[in-house]
Length: 220
Image (cartoon, rainbow, N blue to C red; front, side, top):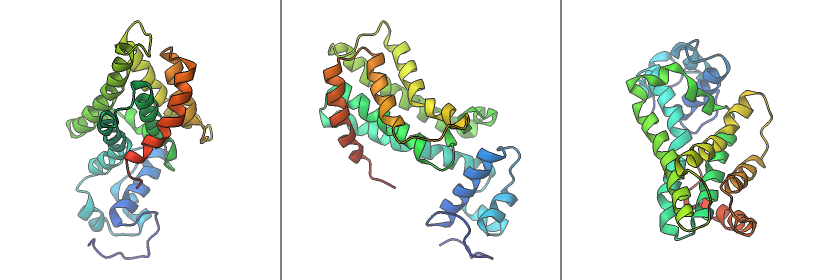
């Protein structure tokens, strides 16, 4: 159990850790990472600063926890996709749709934190590796699709970078103040297949079957 509060809970979340992450997500997004102190986060949650340190030893650990939640679920899905025996265009649609949804659904635009200069530090090496692993997972679906004759691209590497950037385009849209639309993930996933010159009939198949694969990663 966490340490006792000195006021009633003020944030969303089922645990002290989740509430700290919620407060930090808002503050890092709205006023900046450097400008936010652990004392401010603790006050926003309604706990003493010492109680915050019970969950997170440093502010960097809070940031790492937020970043982890933006890539780990997509990696979990990517790991399960090969076992489905679905063709590459369906697997790629499923991964792109899931990833874009993950970046859309949070109250705060956590993807914008990817561009913090602090992320160059060794503390965030694991996050950088995870994000690279996720990009490579995209590349595997694209490479398989090229081998199967489903996609036509001059370079798998370039195509991977373009599709990965398209999935993360929701970050810049949210940063620009565009209101999140629930249609974004499907638009992005479909556009990714068109970018790869996928046949329209196969795109329609991917739209039908790809959403079903979202269930491979439990909600929450």
